[in-house]
Length: 301
Image 1 (tube, helix red, strand yellow):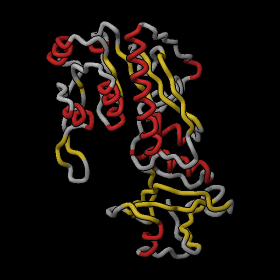
Image 2 (cartoon, one colour):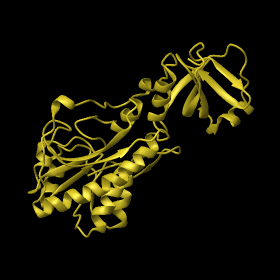
Image 3 (tube, helix red, strand yellow):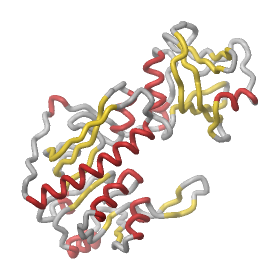
């Protein structure tokens, strides 16, 4: 069970290991991409390559869907980046159901663990597999794998890294459950932290924070959903920055120094490397400056 690109390596790894995948459950077809053409999910496309039956229920409580799932008589449900499952679904397999989560649980329970780990300046994260229970992301942990978060990582690069590591963890978990050697451990709720879903308004940059916090915020939202700011009434998405100096100026003040596009934070300044003006493509700061004059007193808000 899965929907986005993140789930595809796990599906492919289980298939390549020779396990019979009797069905794939994914989200409904919907408009995607810039052209908004109706298409299937990445997981559906991967399943089609292997001629695996695909189920796309609008509701996981739908009686017809639940009956169809029971008819498959699965030994195990593997869940990667999917919806919250009701007990009527995750209790079907005789060996249980487990989920792959992109954090070292109980840290960063929720929908956006990759983003929040970077936003909060973490230097390490990882993946966890755990048996599903009624409360989201609270089940007993089966395996965990950790990886560093480098200073140059953003949400996109870390997503791809964790998808690969996660596929290893999924296969390791399937094999352990098959062999009867899985030894799940309860999570310590005292160490839990949240990683809630991120909405558009959450992505508005606060330039009054220090440069380190602003840079982490930007890379934690890059490339999607993307941190944004405004100049006059124009929206600018910021994708990549680096530290420039420790100069303290007016937060949001924009300046050009040589070929560098510089923005002041509460403490320190950042050099903007990649951005996107509303209605235009993503571009380098150099490309942006060829069509945008930065005068004295220009500020981002």
